[in-house]
Image 1: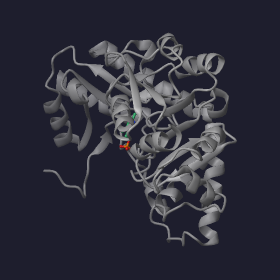
Image 2: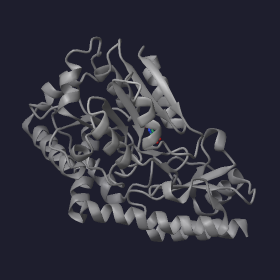
Image 3: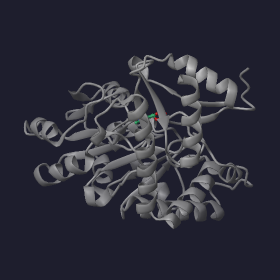
Length: 362
Ligand SMILES: Cc1ncc(COP(=O)(O)O)c(C=O)c1O
């Protein structure tokens, strides 16, 4: 029987498991969002995030999910007479292209089959046309469990196309995979907190370069809720434009402090270890959906080579252990399944889950 008050342990690729100490941060006494205590929390949190993201530029907190920043990136930084190149390699990168079209912008799509990466050569070939003002890239495609080679793409763009803006969806990457915002020359990178930050959903984090902020000044019809200019003005006072999700910011502050204390290199290698562990199991029992080189360290998409009934397996494990993992996304349902290994999920958690799956598949 389903009971939202006694929910299953989550191994779906977001929202992920949230630890009790993090949940407690959400229950702190509330603050007035125009009072000094909030400004202190805001400033501390933003400063910590800047260290985590290796940036000295702007970091904004948005009381929205990450999809809001899909829209914000386009509405703030792509003019109506400009064209944006949307690279598409799965459900989420496809959706960002739809959002850009929905914002009335000129969009061209660079598409590869689901499970294939976007490569520097492909991006280079498109950008060589000279048509584009900006590129959208998804760091980690959560639908396919694939990590795009963004370091290589970014290096190529910095060298050959320094004027093209780089927008990065880092939703299932930030706080888990290497991210050096300034060094890579990115203009926007964002995530929602229900992934590797391991906080319940309801808040997004966005790093925005100075040049992207400058550009937004001259882009018309930016709207209100996601207007970078208004965000920057509020941020100067260590505030947000609208009443923010203060409990989530307290939890974010707590998680970021913890991550910085651990050290970002250690955070990234902790995720790499979990990724390797789950991939070793997947290779032995099934196969990987993506080529190993591009397989994600935050989730594994397993190719269902044994033809198991994925939905029934998930149901059985939920009934016996009150635990769920993810079926394949969209058209990959039943052909694949997905296991998250990010945030506060541990190797011990994973060992337990994989043993339960082993029991089910025999
Ligand atoms: C890569 C990626 N981008 C964007 C989103 C959308 O994020 P949100 O649901 O926080 O709006 C998701 C959600 O799973 C995602 O995995």
